[in-house]
Length: 147
Image (cartoon, rainbow, N blue to C red; front, side):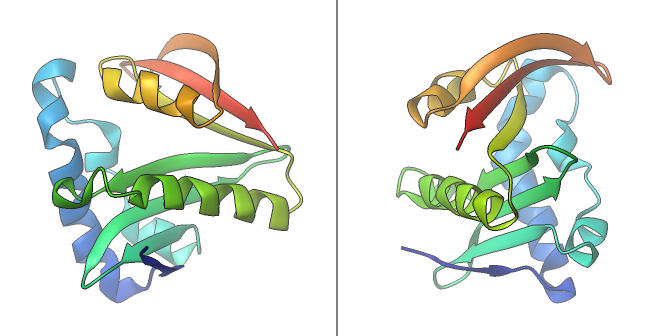
């Protein structure tokens, strides 16, 4: 089990590096950098939207953005060497906890259609695909989970 905490400005360089490591293998599939590799983690941290999972070091990140009627799970990533150890599951559970704490009854997320592992992962965690669309030059698959 990792310790979860809000990210601090000092964490931003690690978040950038973690996102690069977690998403770089998708570049050939997508044909360009996935959005999480170009995200402004400094802004997300300043807004209070970013959580980190720590063991001996930061091994995961979670970006949650409140919307009018749901919580958007904008990004969840786990360092490649820590994948398969339950960190992603722990971060998703934390997202659900935060959604309820903030008064939301729904979490939404999207992933790239080329990230085929995610298309199987999220339904196993109770997320339901709602639609697919091209957005910002990416082929996205949208999911929701009612709490």
